[in-house]
Length: 363
Length: 128
Image (tube, rainbow over all chains, first blue to last red; front, side):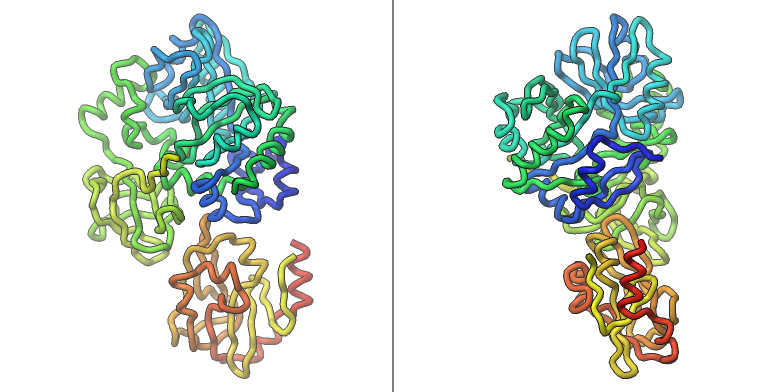
């Protein structure tokens, strides 16, 4: 049987349509459906159950040094409460998972992983620690994402602390709805105002109900994985298994900024070679001319020849068009390039555009 | 609970049929549009095209996935709802009315016997 978060019955009671994601039964959408959940998040707020994601702690004098050897980004110099997005790499320079690593203290690092990759990440990190230990936090910890322009207004009704001044990728401890929580200014929607709330699993229903009560009058909707995908794709955020995988390097995925080539980490030699010789393929953002979506796996063509493949595709409501990400030959990835996507016998016209497709308005 | 109007015929693939003499108006049911979620694109046959019972005649794209639309009856497409090109979400809003998809001139009226009435279709979707 698939895993279920502590709020599974709550989602069912709200009329959620449930799908399997990474071995978890998760809400795809609620009765409002994906498009309304998406637009609510961009104009007011969206509440997402993200407790299926992994949470780990790496603690000990060797914590930083051990993690430095395993991830692409330089983790040195972070302040307490600061986090960085990074890739966990293989010896081939490809990606095991994308993570956010927060420094809680000098010898304590808190890591958030994807759901389906969590076990593999924990095993890999755990096997490669020196003078540090790994702790799986997921048994007792919960996570909810609150995203959108009304985020801080909603939190103000539930907490004395002022979160609006929290900088991006910074976390702080505070009581929210009377529940001791860690609040980080981060998320997966591209919205500048948004938080991830970490708190004890036993308080999941209390926190959910408090947020629903505070947020719904302000236009907040509960949102499922469907809206989570349309929101991230409009902002060109990668999804592991699509834009990132054990066959794709961070440089091919356009994540150069998350790679420190002068650091020694697993697979860096391959990435240095890619930087020197050029990547064999590159991620391109394709805006389609119509509303018909392209999907992962659809071939991308230029002048009748296949030059790549779609990695993710959907209809972007904030963009007003179908949008897709694709891995293509580097020369086909230049902004302005006209391409075709082969979908069920038809060729859909698309143009490579600058990332992101959509830039959320700063509240 | 999904709406299943009496007076229409239905298929196991969740299309509805309204018979007007030797013409059938076809769309997808309330159950189908709820299951699909937001419809963002519809691909329909052209007027004049031949269609065959239970063969695919089009595709509906929702945000998440593409779903085949099957022709409930054999015949020739007389008309296609061109409003659905600009506003495919009409199917979500009014699947039995403004969200109609095609009008078919029947070539084998006997096929009507194979369609479900509203009671049988209601039973089918209740089991799901």
